[in-house]
Length: 266
Image (cartoon, rainbow, N blue to C red; front, top):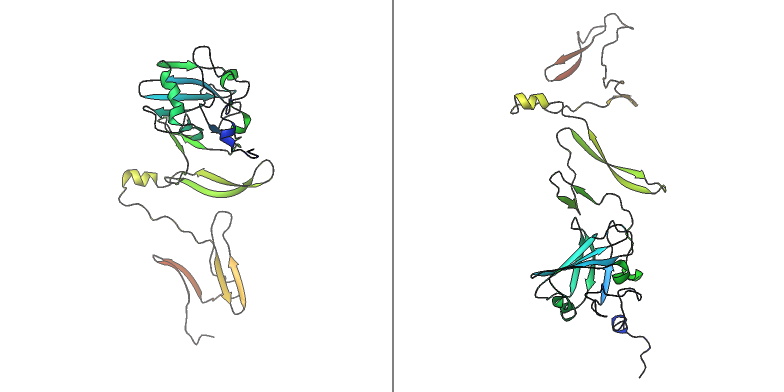
């Protein structure tokens, strides 16, 4: 019976896949058997392609696989503990970000237990992966933050503005004119820092300024906006009458506008 459409992995059983057909799979001292790995999927954030296994570190507790590219021989890595029970080796970069996986079986990975304890290095021509196992990763901008203590933060990150730091969301454009989300950080300082140092228990209430005063008279509406300094001036005008009854004064609770005089005054 002829099989027209064989399954992918069984059809590649006796080949060098996921390595290149031209890969020698040997550094002269140790070697990979055909079928040691069933598949691979590599997508390093800072990788540039042409991934290969640069070294295999064998110890009494685990086996570590180091993968490199054109720019860095130790770009990403993955480990499997002894005794070998796992079939998938997860790959991460130096900051713990996911970078792919190597797929095998415990019986196939048992090959590495026969290698001597130590580091076994390989050249690109010996263990380079095929291009179909390498996924290009677009430059997505900032992917993490290195903290002062050397630790790395990635994934979902919260930005909280405190102590005179204002964080806001804006929409900008990339170099191709496409809309992109931006985070704007303004460091304006804390105007109450001296009050906090001298008397932190009695802080001032934050100022909530009036941005507009709307005057409604019959069917007309007038909007009074601040000047360039943020001030709104409200005062009486006696240009039309020397004995104007309108009074404007300030009090401890706010601004008082009243009409003085008798109700029968002409």
